[in-house]
Amino acid sequence: MEVVEVTDELKNAYDVVVIGGGAAGLSGALMLARARRSVVVIDAGAPRNAPAPGVHGLLARDGIPPAELVERGRAEVRGYGGQVVSGEVATVAREDTGFQVTLTDGRSVRALRLLLATGLVDELPDVPGLRSRWGRDVVHCPYCHGWEIRDQAIGVLGSGPMSVHQTSLFRQWSDDVTFFPHTLPVPTGEEAEQLAARGIRVVAGEVASLEIVEDRLVGVRMRDGTVVKREALAVAPRMVARTGFLAALGLRPVEHPSGAGEHIPADAIGRTDVPGVWVAGNVTDLSAQVGAAAAAGATAAAHINADLIAEETRQAVAATRARDEVAFSAEVESRVCEAVLGDRRHGL
Image (cartoon, rainbow, N blue to C red; front, side, top):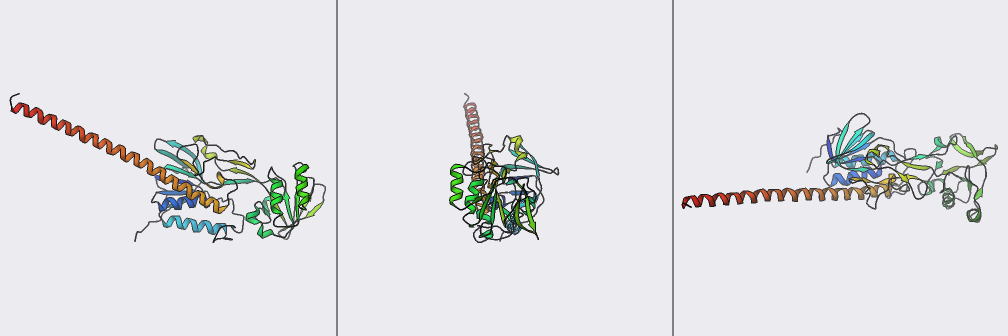
């Protein structure tokens, strides 16, 4: 039985450095460690889903607390010889054979390839009470939280181009849904017709704050002082990828086609425009749930491994050819010397 040594001391170099220790990063590291690659996960310890009581829609692990899922993932990565190191990345620079990753505490490490799985930051509207209820009775995703607030009085706070669509989605989980355009224009035309047809009330005016009683949401207070009773509030935050440290590589986030935020574009396997850098999870797919993020991490890791194998094969072929050329030159030189000596023996 193979004995795997577990240590979280950062080494000088790895085949792959994974930046971000959520579902995407840990899943990618697990795949790479099982492929017998040297891999380290550098995790700043600020998961997006930390405020949520449970992860939902994840087969065989529905409802698992986010922290427990991370701990299980870390244990699995370490079980195959991978490392998980706490730290925050400050800069990433290209070198001749890969990359140098420097942490904010001054530590640095080299990598042949990078898997970026830093996730994103939810930028919430500036409404008093919103942030403190985030992940509890203020939610964003109906597939993540809809079941938990089913049949409740749900409000949807207008915050971006996806807000009306978000309102229509939450109507699937409750007959009592109210849309608060807040600082957005009040829906007109086809949008207004659709909301009315589904029985969704629209309350015009700016939202001033949330009403909290005994640690639970009970309503939404408008600027005019009116309080609309609500038990849950949905909001579509602006989602921004955590990628500031990649600027030196020329890899910068761009606006997502949905208008919901910024992401790092990549192809179907997570490969970016910067050679040697892959991405997985919410940093590139703003709507990915935990299961999708984990799958993307595994997919990217498999292709990173294949890319490394291709490079190693090219190097092996080049080395073999070089040895063959040296051997051929030596053989030719030997035969020339034998021929010269033979001529001398025969007096030529």
